[in-house]
Length: 378
Image (cartoon, rainbow, N blue to C red; front, side):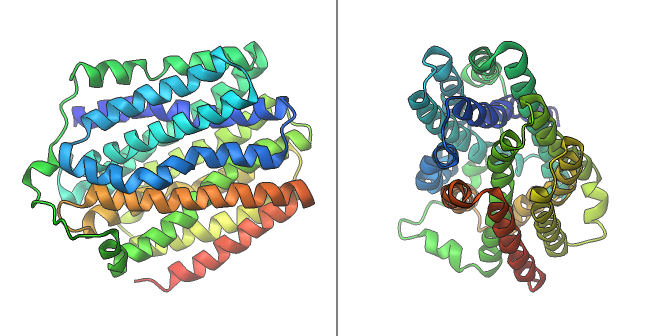
């Protein structure tokens, strides 16, 4: 388990940059008078290359293992944070979004593949819950550091601080100091004729891909919309960071309780609750302007979305054919990133034209339809 805990720690460092830089990039773009549509483009760039390359990356990881992709991804994350520190322009933010989004995709596909092979198969809900707890910590710390760092030291210094976070993962992986499982060593040889379509034809996997795409899109919309909405209603960067941070605190709480909850409820009822709770939260957001109320609704949203990822990853590992887990994770990530590109662009344009209320309520409607879909699964 020492391998798992240290892997979670270095993943926490990289995800802290990913989560914090999303907020920092959004707020600095707004500081440079970018429109909501431009902010949407920046958020979409986080997902563009991951959408196009996640499946290929998953196949590569199935063949060569996780270490090299994790190292390369960590380097890209560090460079992405360094770019606006050295070149603080709106153009640089576009490059930052591409580097950090692509780098974290490489790291995350590899790490999620490896985590599923640490311990016994029946321990996967607990293993992924522990990993998700790490994401909750970094999801809280990253935005909080971004908000308070910007208020105290400015945007540029905050970019520089985030660039230092991946140095430990780079050193540990580059010097081969972390012993990782090698699941691909016992996998059957890859079939040259196999296709992603084979995975999409798998009934359970297809349902998992749809549900996880909706849940991830809700998560991304929260990160995209709250900085814009908070700025429009006059919240400070620190207050926006607190709203985002309360969401992450809730994900930490629910993931700590998830092993006990999962013994009473199976995956699909939990995913239905997750989608329903998220829909209710997005309906409430545009009706509120006080930071304390927004923090409460963000906490509710965190409870709903926080339970979803461990169950999705456990379902993927338990139902994917042998030797194709990395590819399945890549398919899921491609579909997730596809929605993450489309939704910020669509709702960024909608927010520019009509304001943020239609953005929140359209997301709530989509999630409500998703909850009906999940309720029919077994």
